[in-house]
Length: 313
Image (tube, rainbow, N blue to C red; front, side, top):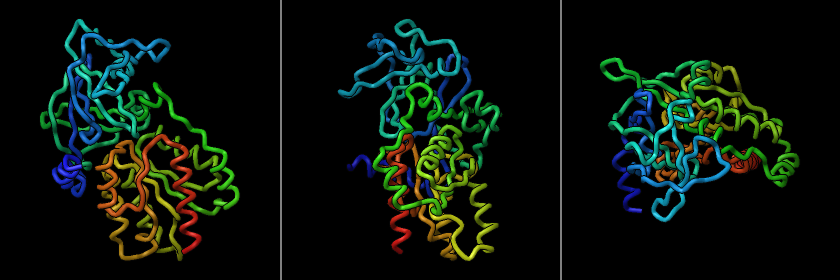
């Protein structure tokens, strides 16, 4: 617990200032990529021997023992069609990360350095490029060299999959409560993550609108709330990591607004950065709730909870 609180104290200023710290690394194409430091548990040298896992995705190299836990190792370059790393024949590294409560090992050719960037300096690569290259964002070195930020959620979804089935008892409860007038705003730059939320809400019969950037959603809310006598939405579900404006900043901007039609809308942060420190950070930013990504039942349970709170207030 003390280590976790130390980490929060050391990095809280980044969240309050719309910044992220990332580890950059190289794959076999020698291009530079980046991953949010908050998702990283440790970087280790790849063991010379990795336990093979039959009948798995080709990019899954195998499994290793990490602090007494079995961790699946994924050759990150292979997920994008790059030359696979020759395990045991060339030096490589594993970035051990936590995504949505699950620990994964991402094998890379070489870690590079830690850098800090404002989310305003992190740009969307555009929808077509994003889909083709599994990119979620781009940023640049001072010399103009690009740093590609991968959509790890999309990569893991394609390799490991995500359970999009909602428990029948939750669906039945949704039908009983009739949430057809409970309007939800979804904000996430990852198309894969938006699709997963949207499929969950569609199964529940909840109306929703989606934005691929917090800055767009915030501008839309600012432009339209004055013409509406009631809040435009009953609930907002937002990612944290987004180019231009991150979810923490979006939450603060909503909660500090003097008009209750905006500040009173429940804000739920929905992130693959699911460790306890980020839950605490979400609370510090004013979020009303926090749930991990790629858990359909968690989304459904959260929507039902806030629907019940809303109709009883």
